[in-house]
Length: 256
Length: 230
Image (cartoon, rainbow over all chains, first blue to last red; front, top):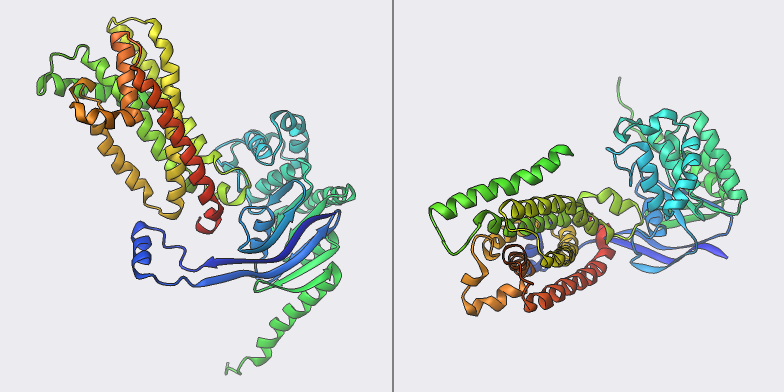
C-alpha cells in the first residue's frame, strides 16, 4: 500500500503576500490589482510505498520544502491530490515546536504530545528519548542555552522515538556530530527494517545515498527525474557539476 | 511569575482606588453602596476580557513557528492563549471575593452561580479570539482594532455606573453584550445576594455558545490558508 501519494500536485503562492496591513488590503480591494502568482510545485506526481525511503534533491527554491510541508499537511495543495497513510513525524526546521525558555525535559513532553503521543505513552518513552539524545544532565537546562547540534539531537530523538510511520527530515541531520550521526544512521536503518518510511531532503548527497533507495529531483517545481536513488543522485550531481564548470569556462579573461 | 501574580492584583487595586476617588469626589452617586466592591465587580470581568482577547488575537502570529511547522490542530493556539489568561482571572476573582468579605457583605448561597457565569465569559472570549486571531493572520493590524474596541467597551460596559441607570430603550442592547450582563449578574449575586436576572441566565449562555460556534466555523474556514500568510 502506498504510504504517500502525490497525484498532479501543484502549489501556487501569490507574490506580494507580504503586504498584510489593513491599508494594503483596502488598496488591493479598491484598485483590483490582479495578483501575480508564483508556482512552487507544478504537476508533481509520485508514490512512496511501504518501507521505501525517498531522497529529494534540487537547488535552493526548487520546491523541496513546500513538498514536505504538503506531505506533513501543513498546507493544502492548490491542485491535485495528496494521500498520506500513517502517522507522520517531521523535522522540518530546527527548533520549530520547541520553546526556548522551557527545559529540555519539558520540551520533550510537549513535542511528544504534538507528535500525537498520549501523556502515558510520552511518560513511557521519556527515558528512551533522553538516553538516545545523549544530552545527560543538560536535559534539565532551558533550551535557549543549547547549541544548534544539541537542539537537533533533542528534536531528532523525539521524532524517531515516537514511532512514526513516516519520518520526514529536512536538512537538519547535517548539524549533528559524527557520533550522533552514526547513532541516527543506525536508528534509521532499524526504522526502515521495521517497514517504516523515510523521506529525506538534503544537499549532502553521500548521506542520501546511504539512507535512501529511491530518489526525486525537483527543478523549479517540476520533477526533473525520479527513480532509484543511485540514478537520480548521479544525474543531479552531474548537472550540478556542469553548472559549476560552465561559468568558469565562460568567464571573460581579466587582466591581473 | 511571582511578579506576574502581583501585577494581576496591582492593576485592579489601583483602578479600584482611582475610580472610588473620582466617583466619590466628583460624580458622587449616593445610591451606590460599597462603591469599591461595586467597581471591582466590573473591573475583574472586564480586565480578563481585554487581556484574554488581545493575547488570543495575536496568539496565532506570536507562535508562528509552531503554527507553520508543526501539524497540530490550530484551533488549540488561540484557545490555549485565552485559557492561560484564566490564571490571572482566578487571582482577580479571589481578590474580588476577599473584597466582598472585607466589606462585610458575606457569602451566600447565590455564589453557586459564579462558576457558571465566569465559565460563559471564558467561552465567549474563546469564540471572539478564534475569529480575531484568524483575521489577524490576514490583516496584521487587527490587534489595534481589538485594542480600540476594548477602550470603547470600558465605557459601554457598566463598570462605573449601575445597570439600573441605563435608559430603558438601551437595556436590550446592553443585555446582548455578555460582559455587561455578566457584570450586572455579579452585582446581583455579590452585592445583593440575589440570583442573577433570568434574562441574563438565558442570554449569557446563548450569546457565548453562539460566539464559540461562529469562532470555530470562521477559524476552520480561514486556517487552510494560514500557511501562505505567515
